Length: 251
Image 1 (cartoon, rainbow, N blue to C red):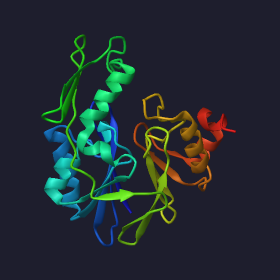
Image 2: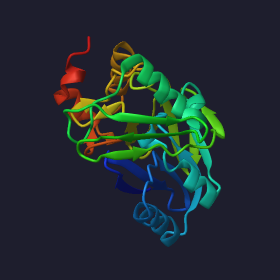
Image 3: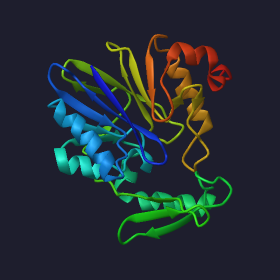
């Protein structure tokens, strides 16, 4: 199995290109293309390996994991896959931000940390621009086409001879998922499980209780399973079971 990782955007989301090297069938997980350079890097890998891009998979609906959906679908015709509980957000992400703003107020700037971000919501264009007056940080939401396929727990996604099982792991979002290949001993964990950490649950549609249940399920996987998270570095289930403070605190 071919796995290529790309650390895209100021939010450092890790996008994965995964392919079966016999059939050349491929999928992209959590594509956050935002610049011409990022687009060229990913497209180059797909074409240099003569891959047939079948699927664009979002582990959840947050914009740092979905901003490349439209570009990839237009270029390669691949299907967009996301869990059914997160699917409605994709084509109307500005509404999710509007609701977040109304419930929680403006978030702190990820860059300078000490001032609240401004949100410019443009429902006619289905866009939101997030910006910081202090440090100049700016982040625009790129709308996604609607999903082509809705995922549920235990669905199987086939890529040549490789099978990925969909594990519904809510907590970070209602429809958060992980992708597990027993044959390849790998888990793409999105923003559920990080190296010695976990995804945040303080958004209005997050749930700490659900996150604990999801982490508990992931810890049932074989300890030699390599974890490919949505942010930060690689890990293994064995390491997380022994050292992750959020896992150790689960009863």
